[in-house]
Image (cartoon, rainbow, N blue to C red; front, top):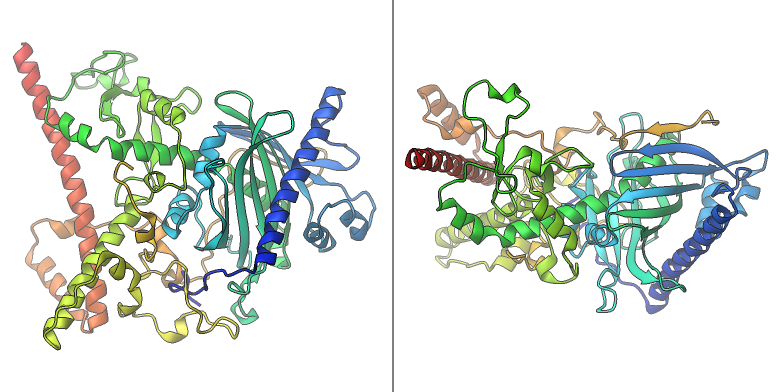
Length: 582
């Protein structure tokens, strides 16, 4: 079996009106029951009682980090049968999961961030948008946006209901699972006029996304989670989560409580994704300003506190030493102290910029961070769709290669040159020769011959299929329990070593490093090595893959050379300004 799956492995979801309405009703029911649970918790708190009945719930884990603090509980069995416990659940799928010996979980706490950032981070208007969000932290091995149940409305720009398939990374001791689920988000007001946001993750059975055949050892896992969040301050949300996994795979059940705690904590990565999208959007809108700043003398002092950087060797250990840097969003010079976030203690933020990897950390000033917080977005509109530069670069490279390949084939064949439009080029990946054999692609009796819609990598398994990037319409402006767990950080499982490198979606990783020696004056030995590498690509398929990788490395090298040039230019202007002042 090879992952990621080839492009178009899954058909587009096509639902009857009756089925569609059933799923909409499921979302409404889950949200309504969460509101009722929240009211009970508030009533108990007002009566000076514990939020949850200690006879029914026991503390199972605690997540305490800089930006989130959650207490997680599981339902107590107390000598009751699983059928008796199942009657405590309020919908059929949860009852079936409890009968299967899966514990029901509740999480209550606070998370730094805003509802808008959470909604923006969870948006997935296209395949490219989906994988950009997943690349923020602990991405899955593979994923696919299967379709949309409903879209945003002018009244609720954060409303969405999407079908998603994901293949998560698991520890080597666990057997592989996948999941197909409905993700629904929205912002509404309750009966008292108070604003709240919701997130529903509800597994669904779709004929377009059937479970894999048993011989491939991938078990379909089900999850049913609902979350409410309210803003209690301008920067903090109170959250309530309730949910349950239904895992038939005994190889995963042994770590179920840890996985559930990690999953609940990871749900709120959407806040960080939303902030990163906003900062990325602001940075792209500031391109003209950055070019103008590059043409002016570089400041020698912080634009906020007016402090100058240390000018003599060995000053870095002094308490008054100042290090100047450039805000990646606005381009202004700031010192490390003015850029430092009070809560996290870091001066760097994650942005979806740079061709080396999907998400990287850059210095950001407080002004830009504040502007991003005050920024209003409408995720469904094209100008707010953010796709990482990492994937946009591959879109450009794919178009270039396909155009070149088509022109070459036309001139060598009938003499007619076939010109590919951008949309045709990026959607015609099936015309690219692949090294992967027919037997390397996962097929089942129920899914063979399907039209496809997943992430597919190129010949060397290094790049993802950007077949949907054109549809995104990019805009450059654009304690007492033995099972108790105390989590200070999110659980980060390692990929299974039993899977070959070729089957890993390496595009998610940052392990691959470009050898920039390829772009320096070479010795005879390196020249012979290059000729050997080129001659080894004896087939047309290997040659195409070889040239694609060379183009990608050249792009990364050019980007680094440009950054180095800007740095040198700033240093030269700094010295010139110093001489002028002297």
